[in-house]
Length: 275
Length: 297
Image (cartoon, rainbow over all chains, first blue to last red; front, side):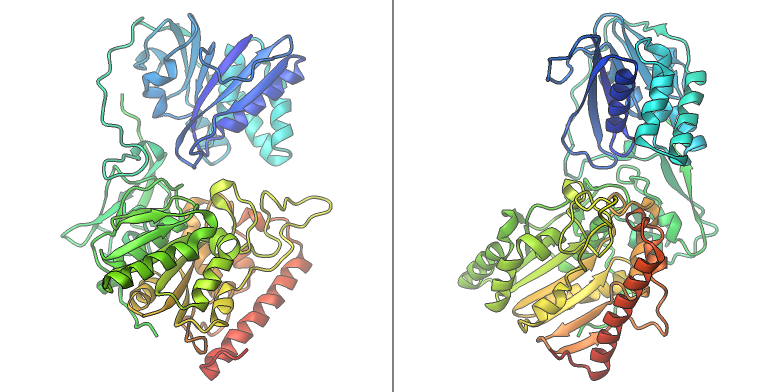
């Protein structure tokens, strides 16, 4: 039996991806099941989903605890050790990252491969919905799931033109995925427990939610406060020199400020993930 | 009636603890931020199950879905008994609560004219649970419970005009507002918070996930709803005095509002014309009421 764990954020289509993998395995004549982990499935919030594939009927109904494969849909979560934790020995981690697999800070008895799914998704779909863009890469790593089956399953979920775009993204990532490398560190570094500031609170940090962030051109800005008043998160601070400034901890990257600016002084720029 | 507010008068201080747990480009988060900017610190906020918008700095309490009216009644009467008239009981509810599940309790509280302010963030469906249809859903909108197929064209019913339902009870103050007109919204909240009696403010808050449009276009969608007459901005005092706050010379076609939203994508020309006729008729009604400065039933 193969067990797969998917890490993503709401809106990236991790739950749809789990269904597509299960449907693709079914198309190839195997038994499969997809399990979404329900919680705060808000757009932008981290979530997990699980898939089981077997050549006999799958009787288990539990969440996956020790997966063979771990797939990460988000660039920021890809830099986090959680995606490589509690894997089966020799398990495979597929991360969405622009970096080379050896540059990722992941440790354990695992193999790592990378693909720039966000870039592929923006190119083929026009939006950073990375689910189908990473599935192509997954087909290359997992012999049980074929690209043909995945394409068939994608058309089942996205018929017509949207399906064509998603299949193009899957094919591109099938081509672009890096080779598997074995992780250098076997033992993950001991992590210092940080103050947990999930849910609500003045410490909460949502800087990892955004794919694009506002960059303010102070020359062009006329100080009309339009961006400031429309920001849903109060993420634009009104500074003393009558100009807005982004509060990095609070901005979710929705783009309302850039869309409403009367002089187009705000531009949404893709966030660069730091090593 | 509320007094006009300018952008310079908008307080810089925030009344919320940001960032919240909302989706990107959330209209309800904008509504909460703007509301609690002018609400001041002496507020007890009441909630019933709804999308988690911004948590405010004021104390807050929660109740069951049908408990909006009773919980506000309890707090306002307790405050009266304690002699703390400086503290306001404020409810911040979703459209599922105000238009559907809590409707009866709120109607009873309105009839008794309890001293409470009800603010409804209307995102036109039960967006917290995945977008099931509510009393606030407009006709032909696709929701997870009215999916478009061979035998279904989306929601079958027109949106409840809850403002007129409350007006029929003659409550002191009712207003509609939109996140695209923040000064107007804040002026209404500022005016309503100091009135004695039952007050209602209905705020239309677009939901990018449920209405299926790009999160950056939240304000654009909210603005086109007002400009096309789908969501007129008005105030009603004591169930009769009527004032229309936004009166364009000419309404925009409703297609400007419908087009960016994928929930209306399936609509045929006949259906759009039907909606246009319905919207024009309702707009004529509010125009007539505005001219007479009186709402007649």
